[in-house]
Image (cartoon, rainbow, N blue to C red; front, side, top):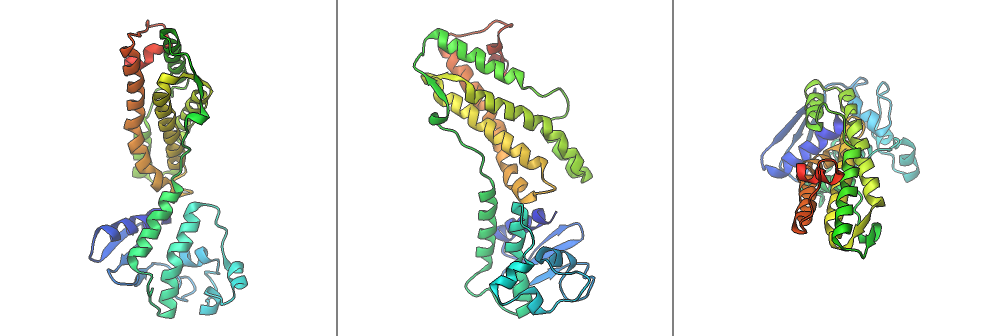
Length: 292
């Protein structure tokens, strides 16, 4: 997973001052604490031209035919466009951006100049943060009701409880179980088991958007809606770790944070209902909030 290796290296370089090594499979990246990234050691260079096979694939050259510097770094912009690979994922875009400077420096014996290692790392982290953009909803996105009577609040509790009960995932492995097993076995198919969680949170989000919400519960409803949105986006990204690892890495932290926030948003609704002395029978959907 090239993307995971890149970002892990960036984080380690930022947190430490000495030489850092990040090992992923057979690739080792060494990052020196100087004004440039100096050494990249790779294990396979089929045509012996100094570019490893993965670098050749990244920049669109032939790993069997030796390349000259002009092949790899054409002077004319239009020529550069011809060798640019298809960049359909954030990971592909990030990989090209991050490694282009280091490979160019290696071939030209050039330094980064004013573009320091810290800037390389900061740009890497910024790129990851830009990939993490779950949809955030505001009051303008939901239907608010001026009714705030006890009956209106009770109806809301039943409606929201019904949404959460309708989209429950069948009993089985939790997302954490699935992610841990996928990591241990390096099995991309294992992550596809997150599909049911992605579907569930997508359904919850869509149904919460359709609800009519009492003004007095607007904040609590938006918190539930937005944490659901984050959970959905995070699990979708993690499910696609093997095809777009940069986005997955960015969303992993979001997932851990949203786990607690999702539960807290449901507890906040329960507290508001309790404050109004609203409780439910076991056969009412609203009882869901009181089972948390």
